[in-house]
Amino acid sequence: LADLRDDGMEIDEVYKKSINGEEDEKSTSPRIRRTPERAEQYTWLISANTKYFNLEGCIQKYGVVYWSQYFHYQTGDTIYVYNSSPDSCIRYKFIVEGHDLQFSAEMEQEKEFHADFKDFENTKLHNRFAKLKFVDRTSSDRLSLVHLMDHGLGMAPRGAVHLMGELLDYIEK
Image: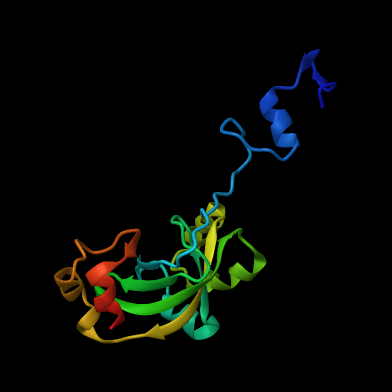
């Protein structure tokens, strides 16, 4: 590659790395973030909004959901899903079956469950997903926001919360 020239000048080092499949901060190619390895399994609380995605329908039809991964979920982790308004309650439990996944054709199946197809297209661009396998659902109000806050949750979850201590014990009993 050192012999490649563009208008008599060497190709910028950034592009050499890109051509070689190497990445650095200056690279213009998309970078896939990776979850740091850890030995222990985590339990997470994430939120869902039925105005944007029909999680119940997706679970009933497929038993799995591909979730945009902004946090470091790892295969084997447990994820509880808090349904925001009008429920304001934990309704689902999942196990992470795969993490740091790039968008694939299999994920197209979820398109019908998005309220706005533009949201689905934007989700595809994110290109980092966790495959969540459905484990259980509850209709109990025991896991409502009021009770969760009584056991250590500071506010309605936005993003992901790594669960531990009293709050985790309360949710899992």
